Image (cartoon, rainbow, N blue to C red; front, top):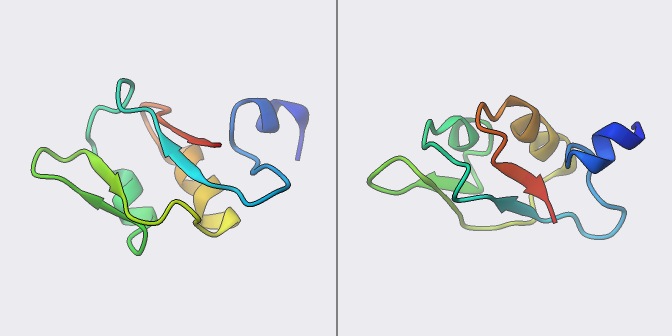
Length: 75
């Protein structure tokens, strides 16, 4: 991937990518729980709870790209 994708958090790091949620930026739309149904669930207000932050790189990158609030990142 390109440097831009790496800097914006779309491309996973080379060692054990882990998904992180910026809880301040998140507006609770829940799209991440649809894309990452086995790894993310929603609380009673619709905000994500990441049960397992080691998600597959391709699914994680898709969720990061589709997040309308840009609240998902690799860490």
